[in-house]
Image (cartoon, rainbow, N blue to C red; front, side):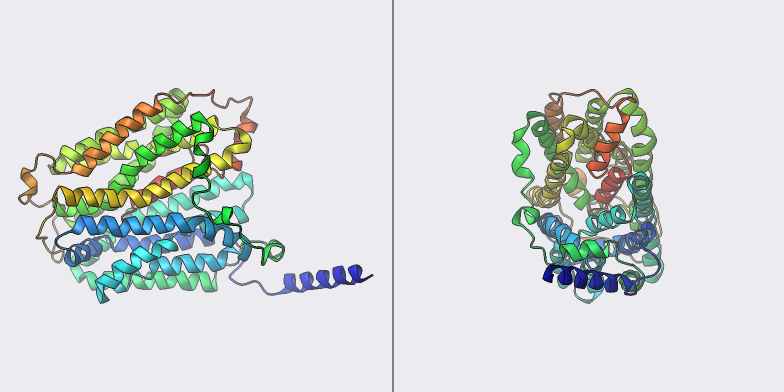
Length: 484
C-alpha cells in the first residue's frame, strides 16, 4: 500500500514537472545549436588581427614560445575536462553547460585591450571549459533521430565554416579603418549576444524525465577520466597501429594550427588582410577537398590508400613550410595543406572498418583522446622549437593603416635562415614515421551495398565519426582555427 502511494506521488510530481513552462523559444532544434556556434566563433574570428598584435606586444622576445605554452595549457585543460563536462551534461542537461562553456570561452575577449596579461591567463584557464562542441553535438543528438542526424551535423558544419571563413576578413577590414578597439568591442557584444541567446531563447534538449531519472546520479571516475580510453590502445594490434599513426600525424598538425598564422605574420610578414584572405581560401579549399575530392578517393582508392595519400600531402606541405620563405610558397603549401585535410576523415572510416561493431565507441574514444592530448602537446612543442632555433622578430609593423593585400618584405635575420620554419620540418619527419606505420595497417573490405545496413548502424553507434562525414569535416575545420 505504501509502495502504491509512493508511485502515485511520483506520478503526480512528474505530471506537474511536465506541465511547467519550458524555458527558451519554441521546441529545442538544430537551429538553436547553429546560432550558438555561429556567434561564438564569429566573435573569435573577428579577433584574428588584434590577437596577433597583442600577442607580439605582450611577449616581444619570446612570442612563439609563449604562444605555444598558452595554447598548450588550454589544450591540455580541454583534454582533461571534456569527459567530465560531457558526463555532467548527461545528468543536469545541455542548456546550463552550453551557457557555462560559451561564457568561459568568450570571457577573455574584453580583456584583450584592458589587460593583455589577464587576457592570456584567461585564455589558458578557459581551456577547462572550451568544449562547446561536445555539448553542441549532444544537443543535436537529443533533438534529432538517426535519419536526420547526418543532415543536422552538416548544417552545424556549414555554419561553423561560414563563421570562421568570413569573420577574419571582416575583422581585418574594421581594424584597418577603425582600429583594434572597435573590433574588440564588436566581438564582446557578439559574445554577450550569444550568452543572452542561450539564456532567453535556447530550450533544454535533454528530456525532463531523463534528467529526473539521472538527477543526483554520482559520476564515476571512469566517466571523468580522460585517460580511460587510452589505456585500452594496446589491446588490438590494428587499433594500436592506427592510434600511433594518429598521434604522429596530429601532433605536428595541432602545433602548426596553434602558431601558423603568427608565423605568417611575424616571419613571412603577411599583412593582416593577407592572413584573412589566406584563412578564407584555405578554409574553402578544405571544404571542397573533404566533400568532392574525398568522396572520389574513398570510392576508387579505399580507406587505407586515402589515408596514405593524405599523409603524403601533409609531409609535402610541412616540408614546404619548413624550407619555404617566399610568399608564393606559403600560398602553394596552403593549397596542399587543404588537400591533406582528408587524412582525419579517412582515418575515422578506417577505424570504423577495423573495429568490431560492439567496440566502435571505445575505439573512437581512443582516437578522440589522442587528438585531445596532441592539442596540448603540439602547441607547446612548436613553441619550444621556435624558441630553441631563435626564430623571433623584435619588430612588427603596426596593424593600423594597413591596406595592402601583398605581403611585406622579409626582415633579417629570418630571411637568411637555412630553415625558416624548423618545427614544420620536424613535423614532416614525424609524419614520415606515421606514413611508414600506416603501411602496416591491414585494410578490411569496405561496406558493400549488401551490408549497408550494418555499416550505417555502426556509423550511428560511433557517433558519426566512423565514416567520412560532415562531423569529420567540422573537426578538421575547427582544428584549422585552433590558434584562436
